Length: 332
Ligand code: LMR
Image (cartoon, rainbow, N blue to C red; front, side, top):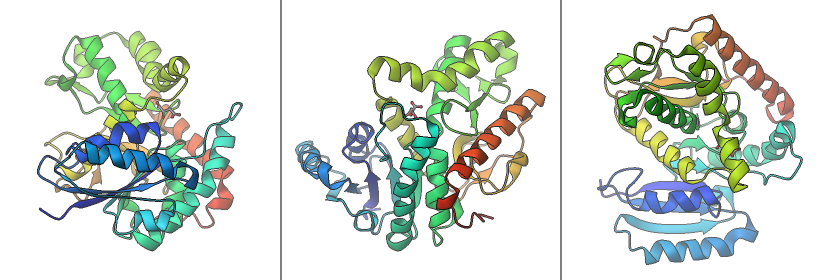
């Protein structure tokens, strides 16, 4: 247990990382007993910023933080990583639409997939930067030596938003809301699953009877939350994204309580009729904190099935936009 866990973070000078690195160093990802080593990746122009972040990490005197290094070379930064957290992406430019963002990120995720393949074959990877499902698809498809079950696109932020809204509506503390699934693509299209969620020891639909609220407020509220925050701050949420990264890794490394699950974008094995090979958020659980499986017991009514199918169609469209970065998309 004294061997530090090696965590590489891309976009390390960005706002999400600034909210994340100090919490990892303080035990927020692997617990208060497990030493950690950080490897920070940034573009060359941002390396001076990494120097001062490293100064702040040092000045914080975290006993668990055994080493920190910085690089602008992905293979060097990822070398030996147990976990790779990819928060870095193409900078947003005014007027950029989804297709522009996909095309701008594709070469970055191709290069990062290659670097992980070269330098971190046993790593588990969480892709945070948007469009995170398709960024993850590109890197995972490129990275032939890292198993497909090591790749995750972060939809924990959608799950957390859904939990918060359900807790508010039911008038309970957030820890009373469990088993929340965010299906599909992170962000504006995500389908927040009310029907299979629980409030306390009862299914949510036995506690909250307001179906109009579910359809008109809850589902679009979860999907639109990032934009609401962006419109006021002029930037994407960073602190809640960092919290979601910590939650994703903690859930993947801690046995899931009996009967529970959590959400992550994973390479589809065809469960629930989702096309094989798409990176799609589904309910998953782990019994040993290492391997995971898709929870197969969700009841999906016709509307839920349609929302999931729409997400699949949209992700197929995204894959088509970057198809030249997916030379042989055979993920099964
Ligand atoms: C969010 O959902 O808050 C972010 O993923 C938004 C974004 O595009 O960064």
